[in-house]
Length: 561
Image (cartoon, rainbow, N blue to C red):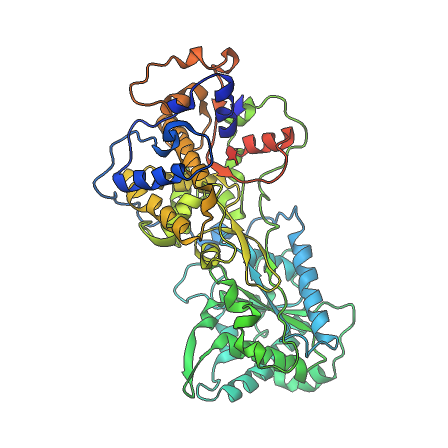
């Protein structure tokens, strides 16, 4: 049997085993102990003698944080898998194409005054395959692709130097009106060329506008301007997709006529004017970025100065939240499984989550190092701020405040998943989904004792005190951490990494107080003496724990709250 963490704890009462025995071997430092003492004092849980506030600690706390691993050289091309066949079991491409087409139709069908511009934003955390989704959509929609990636970056796709030069070189840096007028004309020419290009063929592995020499030769396209103006698109033809990838670059401000202006706002204004000046065109712009915050490209109406200056409503189209690439490499069960022992030996759980976590560079430890860096916004150290907090939250069933600025930051920089956005874009639901490989990567930092006590736990304490993480479940979080540390100790001793299936008896032994003279085999039922248990992370669910749900959680090596 593979037993989840909750299944381990629940039978304790049935076995008449005092919960007070579930204590750790070594106490944490004074600061952490004081915090969790407060946690349990204020908890409504009936847990005896504050047993969950002492953490399992197999080694004495280090005097200072240990030196972290060196930089991992993993290219974005390998991470995003552009050369691999595309898996789309949730029809993410269909939904994105439908959303983009509907955006263009709503704007160009007599709704110019209602909406600000024919654009939307494609948003989600790193590793969900946003750019690859756009590439697949370009097989159905003519696409002009612009990538603002840094020239020195080894990421994929690379910077589209010609496209950027064609659109932006020579624009006025002193007169915003002139900038917008010139850019409006260039966008019209780019859309015209996109229409001529047509969709990407089924075997193409790069954007057609990038591989076609004349696609961004806008000067030559001026000779066809009269054709553009006379062109009436077929009602059945899809709109042209104008994509701005790595678009955070455009949100940087620069001074014009004494005012700080962002390139993004000038582009957005040009998109609006282009749609009004060339109504024959049908296009939709999409702003994409791995680390962009939602408020950059789809700001709340109360904070959108440009939209408020418009006559009319000035609505923005809702962002497209990419969720359809989750678990595409984690194959669903095709039939009922009566013997869970297969989950104890299978490594399929490491394929769960976003496409990035399923990719491998050939050495599993290197994968964990890379994912830990991703949790820490690409930095080597995880000693402070959101990097430390993300290493905690990606293993815990914590509730992140939907109005907290932290929610957007964790999605933008620290691998949290955006579930949904409110219609007014003032709130967002954010959580860390079941991704055992990511959780195991974080567990490596949990077991740097100095780092865990001096950085990770205090970061959670700060988030709870500020209200960014809902404080009502503090006792639950303390219990989750205690149980995870017990699992980690046994798993690391046996396999070198956290998250593996390990003997139930050994996990319960880790939870006993130092020097406890308890024969667990006299307490644990006989048929569970050889049981295997696994828990890489806790997840929060709000539906019935039926057998199917329990089976999936066991497959994922996840505990549940």
